[in-house]
Amino acid sequence: MTNDRANLITREGRVRLEKELDHLWRVERRHTTKEVSIAAAHGDRSENAEYKEGKRRLRDIDRRIRFLKKRLAVLKIVEYSPQQEGNVFFGAWVELENEAGEVVQYRIVGADEFDPQNNAISINAPMARALIGKTVNDEVQVNTPSGQKTWRINAIQYSPFKEPINKSLK
Image 1 (cartoon, one colour):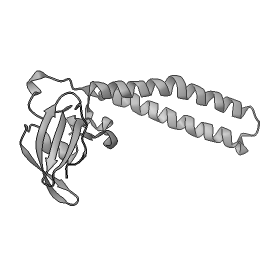
Image 2 (cartoon, rainbow, N blue to C red):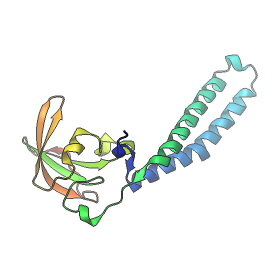
Image 3 (cartoon, helix red, strand yellow):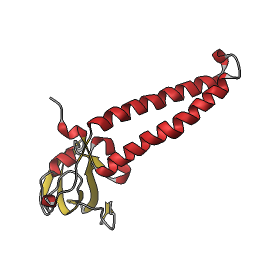
Image 4 (cartoon, one colour):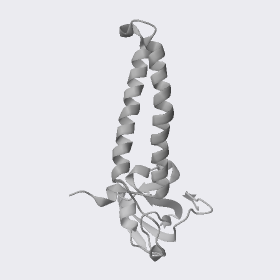
């Protein structure tokens, strides 16, 4: 049995993957192929570092292209629906506060969009699983490696927060 949540993606996430695929195919692969051809023209390929590195890079690019084509074929875009308003569902931006007064904001996205630097957490993450279906002022318990943590939901939006906050309010 497969996890249907593993194949969910936001529209923005899908566009990013499609742009990456296009860039790899139209720019990176063409450029690397040209470099490999030039390196091959230099003679003995067994001792040609540029040729070997170019071929390795070409394999990496082709591997990523194959992966992206397969992923894009199975990903399902989840669009915002007005019925979601007030509850946490896929694609929501959520502001949370813990007992210590720390305030954080996360967006719940698909596994292919996971980006901790931009506070995008996977729908499969323990925090996201705890938040799904909750409303403002609900408290959620999240198991972490350092023990169970309690967070209160301050805000839920389906567009980015105007003022991103991820710091302690101490």
